[in-house]
Length: 322
Image 1 (cartoon, one colour):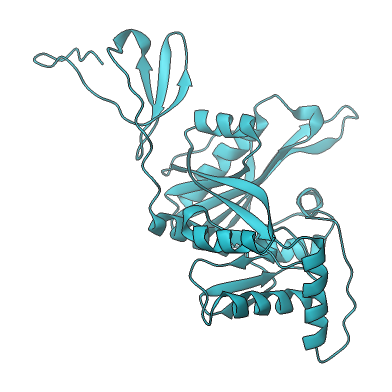
Image 2: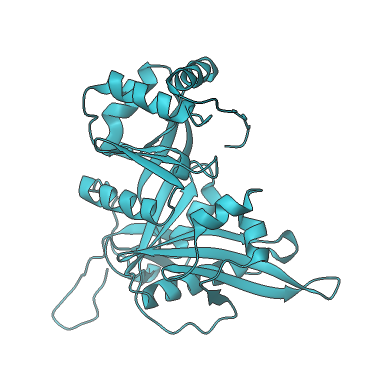
């Protein structure tokens, strides 16, 4: 770019090009705030392949995200963590497997199948991009199928006053629980949590019937210096009014006030519109994860194995809910 300062001709900006306009470009550097550039000042531009996200960062994010979405029941299997929450969300009902299994893969997978089978649940692995590349390939070779690819996006945040209309509370109220509970309110309440480190943003608006409605909402959960923001949603009658962005900004401010220095979102990879929107809001993709579980025949075998290892009778209810 042209540099107007005396004695200098050019300066560089390196980062992700998140918006291209007729008059301005917006660039998100690897560390820092979004930079807006006048197109007239651009002398030259060239693509630079993105640097791979370090394994240490992926592991740190995965552990923090797991802490902000706790399962009802967990059990360690070497370096793996088996998680179960009666089917409420994939994350709380899957194996976090950031390390190589102890005792060999065959024995570890068999133990996973038996553990979930004993609970009438489908065994599922959460696979964090390049960190679990080898495990992913080995499970694929066994016929386990991939699903629900998700992008993890982050941006740096800092403490600042929030003056919008969203209200953030640390209590998960009944109306909010109804929207976020996925038909399992008691389990959802335990996983989502209340109290310190949890924030629920809400915007109330008057509906067509004159009554106040929970027009938009979202959840924030802090672990260390990370705030994980989930559950952002707007009722159909109130969409396209910027309420979702307002919820996001409120939770960013709340998280920064609670000690977080980074905000994280988890966005389904096929939701290209949402990913593009979050990029415009300053978020950068750090990695992607997906889940892998057995096909129908393998699932039936795993459930039978779970029954064989149980010392008492178990009633198994199968559900089509993911």
